[in-house]
Image: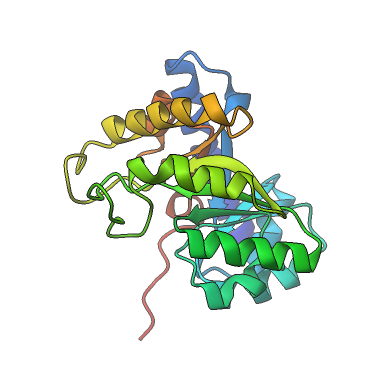
Length: 239
């Protein structure tokens, strides 16, 4: 465990240096960017160690992994983000532990989240996942609402009991006009965030950038970066 703690501390320090350097290069204060550590596939013991090392935001993308891990770490001062594609039959479980759902992309999901949040007596923050590879009315390869659908979905979240509209999230697309152009993709997301905040000023979160492209996200103006591999390492394949 000591070796693992040392490894995590060293990795976290390297990521912190990268974020600080990216903020400095962009003329931004380090406090403007929040690090979310994506702990998918890693055990609750790693989450506990990360908390001891000062991490306050963690993310998961599969409920079957996240629910028991969140329960095991319920005593820790953590904010839990759900970042994966979310089916409505998992909403009740996710609302039980997630403080923010970053992958809201369709009305049916908004309605389900609202119903469960009210039932549980909780307020759940929602980020709209934007698919920059989506066609005019479609969804992206990895989920997400097309830019043209943001306004309507945002209004629905804002008007739904138990939910709080937090802002926007994207994953750098692998296909379409932004493939391989992470900085351009993140700048496009920032433009969409500016549009959103005209109607919803408090929806100022912009979640973008991961281990490989966090610098581009910070340069574009992201408020949150989601980093997994660079902190936790590459998990070996089983078998």
